[in-house]
Length: 472
Image 1 (cartoon, one colour):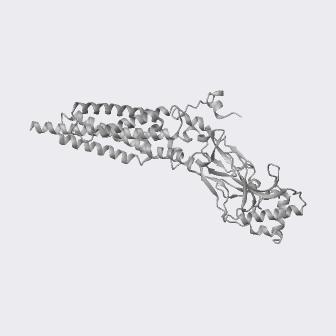
Image 2 (cartoon, helix red, strand yellow):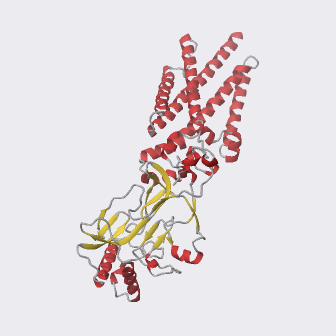
Image 3 (cartoon, one colour):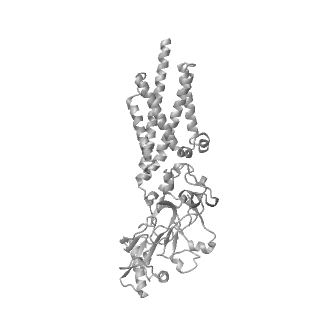
């Protein structure tokens, strides 16, 4: 089967070529196209299928299908077979949800992973598990409902999560189901030599309610006996795909990409669904996942705010330098304060308003997509200001400025070195810590540069006041 890249990497048969100039290449090396271009689904799918209890739904067409109980993406009961009987296969049930993400053959894909719970027969010395005859299990449940005295153990299997469907989840319920099926198979003279009835939930094989073994499965599977299929249709266009709003579409605490709760086991002993963060199912450590979200949610906004502060300060100092021969110090100070208040008002008014912010300020997408060039510009600016400051200090013209100290120069120098080294390593290694160090280096070097720039303004102000006093 052709992949997305087979056509969209080379324009095969006139397909538009995907460029992704703004996206760091590491994403394309580790993520399938579908991971970003199928961020949501609108057709309901089964996420958990239990074949151990009797489905109470209506309109189920055949007896055997009463043993299949379905749960949707929200882990709520879903009368799948009843829906099919009433609506047909072409009338798909609408349900919007975000697909789960798994790592398959080194790439992240959106998938539907099916969890399973079912009774099985385990034979000593023979690998794998066998399912009892569905007709026998159906007859067992039907006989029990007709006469509760038959297979009376089944009466202990209850609806623990109040969804009007019984489920096997506690130790007592597991033991009851195993005992009832064992008796039923004995009644039918089913050959059970060296075999036993077990109950299976995902990769756990229960010989009793409190004893289980785990069977191996692939990292992308929810159950060794459950289906996993990748989503490949209903592609979202580029302007609707993940990343259109910048890196925070995935790397933020407001995004489901890493933080979504995904099902690990359908039920615990109390009937509650057991979930884990999606980064766990992707094989990503919590430190790595949270560092990326902290970087994009906090560090980068701090960097962009410092850039804005630097620009405002540079504009004010440039304005003062330009009008210095024309205005007295009092007027220069008043004008500087008004300029600062004006910029501050623009930021306070525009940033909370998404539409106004997109109109007046660079978008987060633009800032993130040009992060490399912004970083280079920050480093060049820091280097130029550091050289300027050290040159003035060497000339002895800044001895009275408390901000122009070797400590500030050391801060700028050290942070620039960290940023340059980590930025260079980014070309060789794709380690999450390097990205953190790079942004931290930029933030600290820019902070030092702002201090240097501010000190230059303070020193110039002192020179103006001294000159004015001498004239008097």
